Length: 295
Image 1: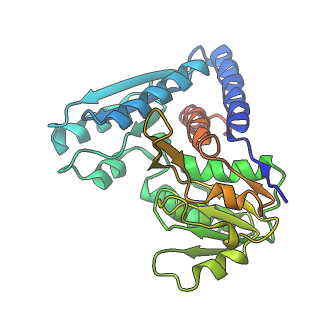
Image 2 (image 1 turned 120 degrees about the horizontal axis):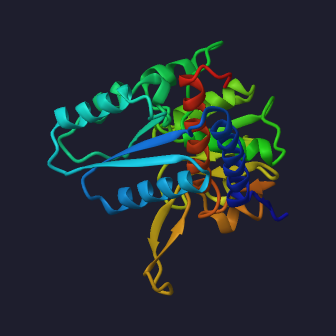
Image 3 (image 1 turned 90 degrees about the vertical axis):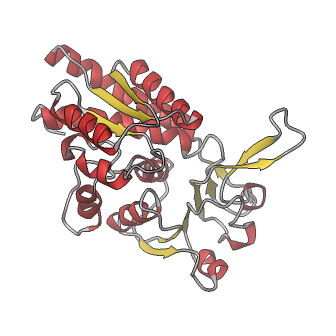
């Protein structure tokens, strides 16, 4: 058996086009467009790249995008004052604080300040709390977990009734994606560094979401034949054959798992493109919330 490859690039492009279509309608009806504000503190090269990519995606969808840059020496007060100003600006529909922040800054305190109606990353404790509570609906769902579910749904993979295993329990991916799977009526097991007999637990899963941050950690013989595998990880490993000296791999050993799984996301080109696509959707939702439009 060779797994069906879940094409994250193609699915992300479809989501981005849907966002662009909504933006065009909003522009025609309201004379303005959803606008995302990114806060970039310091000069971390990866953060600069991510923020630039998000800005370009906004522009391609016809949305507004502004980036506020602060030096690495910015104080907690300066960062918080900027977030408060963006909260109060009616032209801004989504606020994204690019993480990680430089050492010495309290990330959680900054994230907690973001208005619930502009928390397009979905990291505010209130949004996460509503996500995990039965019968509650968060204003926003974190982008990467939402992208994982979108990949499953648009690939025709049944979640309801499935046994799902999430490897990793981070606040950014593991906990929220487990909540989303549970909300979609999967039976969910969350595994982590203290989990005993991890391979045996993963082997029972119809759906595996790997988000542990360790290269090629989940092996092919851990995968149940026909299972769907969503690999959230992106890791650099040395590869002298590459001009860059490295290659990107996920948290799943792809070459092994692809021979066993029923469907699998590649790295790169799987979950990664979905994160920005879902960010666009969330920014459109922010616009609708702030204009009292049915979202």
